[in-house]
Amino acid sequence: MQIWSNSYSYPLNIENLTSIQDQIVENICFVLGGYYGCIIKDNSKSTRQSASNINSFDAAFWNYYFHMNYSKETYMKTREALERAVESDPNYATGLAMLAELYVLAQSLGYPTVKEPLKVALELTQKALRIDPQCQHANHEYGWLQVYLQNKDEAIKGLEYALSLNPTSVSLMGGIGFNLACAGEYKRAEVLLTKSFDLNPHCPWWFYFGFFLVHFHKKNYKKALEYANKIEPVDVFLDPLTKASAKGQLGMIADAQDHIRLLNESFSEKVKYLYPTLDAFLLDKPLIKDIIEGAKKAGLHTA
Image 1: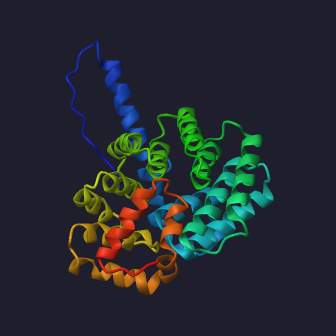
Image 2: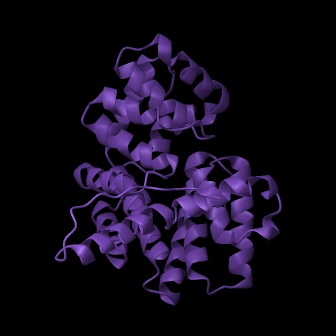
């Protein structure tokens, strides 16, 4: 079945023929291939009905599925698949890095995780890098963990190095753009996120959260709300929080009440410890206060 098409129009002459071919091939690879490309996105939809049997899926595919379909259930299945994969192949560097990322994300999202997830994640990532120093996932995860460790300079260095390993990877470009937004490097983050999205709009919801952070930092709350609204409902507190906070800052108090209700009913623990929760992965402390202030204006009661 046909899942994608596009038309290309260029002035054609003998001098630019090869260049045109290269541009078209590159664009098709960006859109169809890659971690968030059209092909794997379509496969994810078509196989969703059988997703309850983890033995029928590759661990890396489960990791993709989780990033596009955040939920506690999907997280648990992804975690089990990755833990089995690295148990059967202890030298699976990419799997070790993916599992490291999963443990740390679980802590931030309130999902079940291992004891001392940050420490365990760092150990897994370092092991992955010893096995394969050029592993893109492992280098990316190392940079992301430095954000959690509050090491901004080391985070930027690690993330930029991960991107240098494969600068044409659109999914990596967007992922690192998001990480840099969390690190407070908004200008660079916006460039990478925009380029990634322009080349391939099939992206996980947290790319939009990266854009939200960029525009909230600029105090362009209208634009921040625009990107918050692009986040499809996911089982993550950041979904209602971004919408509530932007609407609070814009004075749209009545419109924010459904988001406030959802935060109180489904994410009460996150609301209770909202600042430390955001502080774990956002290095811009004034931005955190601004986000919480917007949510409070909308009616959220938090410490």
